[in-house]
Length: 231
Image (cartoon, rainbow, N blue to C red):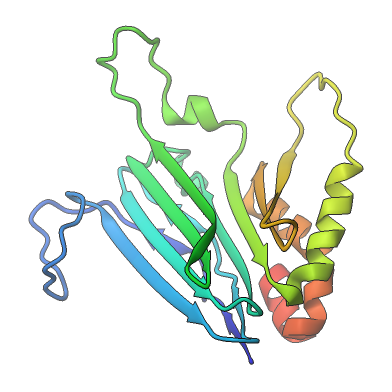
């Protein structure tokens, strides 16, 4: 059995208003002012989960934290895409968020095989030992950062393809930064991989995914694949 989870557009994170009340009460302690998302997913034997949302877009001064935990059986599979854009560029917003924190953890029969965390936070300007660099200074010229995790028997062809593509890359010095950078790390003796990418924009990432994840097309169907990656 397979489950494909998509979104109807980017996840937009607004600035938290001081004194704003929650829609629902909670007893859990959360970082002050952060918009939170917590997800725990269990994938049973021979099941497959495809979590392929559109990117997160944090508006000016927004604070966002998410924790996603995936507990799967030995013969289950998972494809997870987690990505963020620099903001609403049409309004002059480019990495002007206050905080973005994302953790993705994958456990196979209770054994952790991958844990990927990303923290983007504006540096305090009172640290005298270091010259001040804004978040934009540190992240530009790239406007989209993505993490892709694949694991399990149904992702094997895709993992092998990506691994071969990565091993064929020739590293040399660039006169200017390339439009897109990516890396690949195999996990659990090659049963899966973690891909990390930085690109000029979300469409650059989407185009690359559409070209390189073709082996997944027969698993989720042509219509869903086109809806997700636009090709």
